[in-house]
Each structure stands twice: as structure tokens, then as C-alpha cells.
Image 1: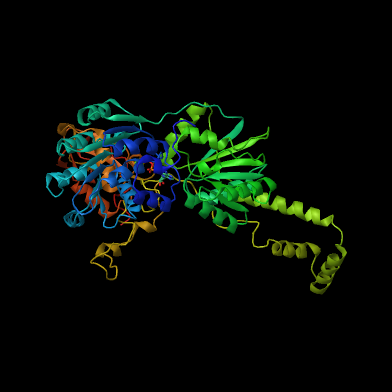
Image 2 (image 1 turned 90 degrees about the horizontal axis):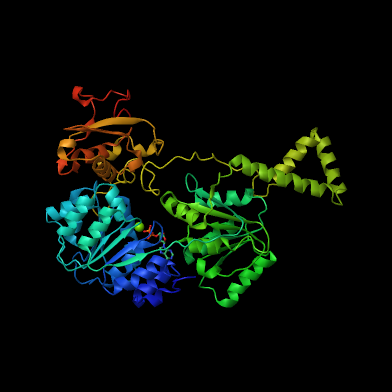
Length: 593
Ligand code: ADP
Ligand code: MG
């Protein structure tokens, strides 16, 4: 291994944070964390280049939390993220790292959320603000956000902010923050404008780049499944059941907690599985590996460190349940299969936001990883039926069937039925809690229309949950909650589904570009940018196509949205003569209401 550090304790973090990390289940720092944390703790500015899923949040969050003065209820750190989902995620991550930091307050602020709520929360105070550039800028302009006590500024996913057209806002914010603070810039790529911002606003930054060393991997069949439609656990059991030549597997996850949880769940589903993590002492660890060798266990769920050096020839499959942080870890992981001249299989689960890491792995290993089609219910049923038939054939060859044959004859006579019917009844009885047919529908994988995979609603998070009024008492729906809820509709309109065209009051004359419009709309309405349809730029106005069925709340947010300081006043496009656009969509906007 190259520069990998085995322990968070080596990085200079406080006891209290180390304790928290153990509680959260983090065992070892990821490469970006190992490199960035000491530098940030030393007070340097930093440019970190690493992809999604490499653990950047903790890389900047942990050092930043060390510097917070809890007694001072003022924003001491500001984290800018391109989208509101990321702002929420990062805020949640900080919240989870603050377990042993009583009184710590982190606050996400983002477009689309009501100002009233934000103002109230800002007035109450927070130590860390996580926000999207537009809204942060707004609050700075209104002087409802004060950065006089700022110690750390983080630009998370800087290239994404550029892509969404926020770079000017980001620069504006950088211009309006006090000089004395540490700045950390994270980006998967370093396009010129980002480089320029770094040069202009960072002071002697240290650069950290996660290398992707090329490596050859043995002749292992490598496939990936893009997570969608089905839970990872269900996908896993389907795959394991249908895979040919399944003998034993190592399943890799990120946290100690996950090893235990997954082992429990797999045991509950009838597998013999055990967790292997850094909490086990050497003796327990060896026992697990012995059991895997002997066949007492078929599945071991492990973290990277715990699985290092495992050499068990019967491991036919390695499953990357959580994607590894880098290609090196990937190569180490899949090297646990295909040993002693046997065939090996490596299966990788890839969340939509991790696709880039998949491509990096392919490049580094110079091998394509083929997409895996998830076995359908029928596939699983067929497999189970085949196994069942085999078992029946086996039993028919066994001794001592006469006694049972006699019972069957008796039933046939007494009930006046044929042997086939009786056999069918017995087959049904023989399922033993594991039905031959799996219930339910096969999910139709559809792309997520909205950024946050965890959030099922169509538009934005505000429509996906009940809204609360007042404090502490019974939750009350605001009156708007009584309207038909969009939650009940088929979720996630497919790309290219019904689109409605809208008109907005900004155009070329305002210096607006397509990306500005995409960025603003994506954030304010919570629509993932790829679901935003064609955009027509005209001199004084523009048109934009959005998925049909937009809830009123999102529409309202969009009416008030500003692009380049101009309120866009979004409304259904009536096809003004000057628009130059033909009316393509017969569907009445907001027809669902
Ligand atoms: P990025 O910002 O680079 O996309 P995140 O910070 O969101 O990555 O981390 C991705 C996932 O990895 C999160 O679920 C996080 O909890 C987990 N994670 C991060 N660091 C560690 C670690 N050292 N050990 C285990 N899990 C980790
Ligand atoms: Mg991140």
C-alpha cells in the first residue's frame, strides 16, 4: 500500500472526535482524509482533488470542528455546496460528528426554503453554515448572515458549482468574507476558472490529489450494478441466489457498524454470514476466517483493513457493497477472489453519484467493468425451482420411501384425487418458509428526477414531508397540505417524460447563459439538472421545459427566483409571437391540479 494511514489517531485529532469516529463506525481514514486532515489542522489552505465518494466531507469537517469555539454562537465556518441536497447532507454529516460536542450547531441554508425560517434560525445562531451560493449571497447582502468570526471557508465540489453557473456568486462571497481565514477548495476536476479562483483567493495552498495508480488485476469477471429501484440488500440476495458457481463471498462495506448490520440481515435471510472488522481481536478474526475456509460460514462482511491479506481459495465472489475510496482499495478487495487458479467474480454496487469512480477504476485497471442485469423475479424463481427439482430427484433415489408412498396412496383413495395433486400440495408444504416464487413486482428502474435518492417526492423536499407549525405540539399540516399531494403520483418522471414549457423574464440582454438558468432552477425547485428540458434563450426572456406536475410550492419558489439579480417570474408559456418557438406541448400546465 502507498501512503495509507491506518488510524485516525495518527492524524492529530482530539480524543473527543476520535471517540465519535469510533461510535460512527469509521475504522480508518480514507486516503483524502489521511492527507488533508493534518494539513488543515496545521492551518494551511488546501486544494483537494478527489472524486465523489472518497470521504471529502470528513476530510474538511473534522479539522474544522476542532477549531470551533462552542461558547461563541457565531458562524465560524462556512461551507458552500452546489446543491441543497449536498448542503443538507454535509450538515447532517457534521451533526453526526458532533455527538461529543454538546451545544454544537450547524445550519443548512439553501434556496427554496422559506426566508422566515432561515432568518429565525440565523438569529438563534449557528457555529457552522452550510449553504448554496445563491442563498448565502442573499443573506450576506441583507446582512442577516455575518461572517466576522469566520475561521474556515470550504468550497465543496467547486467544479460542480462552476458547472451550475454559480462561480460568480462564489467569487462574490469570497470577496465579501474577512481576509483572515483558512480556505479549503475541493473539486473532482480542476478546470481553468476554478484554478483561477484558487490562485486568487487561497494563500499558499497545499495541493492534495488522490492518485489513481494503474494496476493489473487477475482474470476476474468484473461487473457492476447501478443502484436503482431496489434496495442494495435485496439486490445482493437476488444476485447471490442466481450467480453460478457461488461458493463463498466477501462483502465489503465502509463502516464497522455496517459489517454487523449486514451480517445480521443476511443471517436472518438464511445465509451463514459473519462480520469481520477491526473490533475483533486477532483470535476472533482467525476464527472467522477458519470458519469461512471450512464452510461453516459462506459470507464474510468486512471492512478494508480487516480483510487485508485474507487468502481463502473458496471465495468465489467479492461484492463491493459500498464502493471503495480509490482504485488501490478496489484492486486489493477483488484480489480476495480468483485465488489458487480458481475463477473469481467481482461485483460492484455503484450509486448514481459514484459513476465517476467506476470509470476511474476501469481506467486504472485498464479493464471494462460490464453492467450487470439484476436477476428478475422469474430468474430467481427458476433457480429455486431447479434446485427444488434436483432435491426431489435426490430424495426419490433414497431408501425408505415405501412408508411415504403408502401414505400417498391412502390420501388418493380417501380424497379421490390423483397423485399429481397430492404431490403439488406436498411441494407447497415443502417450501419451508422460503417460497419458490418471490412476491411483489420487479421494479422498473427509472432514473431519479430529483437529486436526492433518499427523498422519494417529486419536487423538492418540502412537499415530501408533513410541515410543522408551532413548536412541540401536534404537527399540523399547513392548509396547502389538503390539496392532492404529489407524493401519491407515480414518482420520478422519466427523462423525456411529459414536459411543460415555461417562460421566464430573463434573457440574453441580462447577460444570462443557459447554465445560469439551469443552476437557479435546479436549486430552487429541487429538480435534478438533467431533468430540465430544452432552454430557449431570447433577448428579453427565455423558455424552459420542466417535468409536468410541478407542485404549487415549487412553482411559487420559481416565481420568486432571481437569475443575475432579475426575478424570473416563471409561468406557463403562452407562446408569445416573439418567442420564435412553436407550441409543442398540448398538455395543459398544472393539468394535474
Ligand atoms: P465525498 O464528499 O467525497 O463524495 P462523502 O464525504 O460524502 O464523500 O463520504 C461518502 C461516504 O463514505 C459517506 O457515507 C461517509 O459516511 C462514508 N465515509 C467517509 N469517510 C469514512 C471512513 N473513514 N470510514 C468509513 N466510512 C466513511
Ligand atoms: Mg461531498
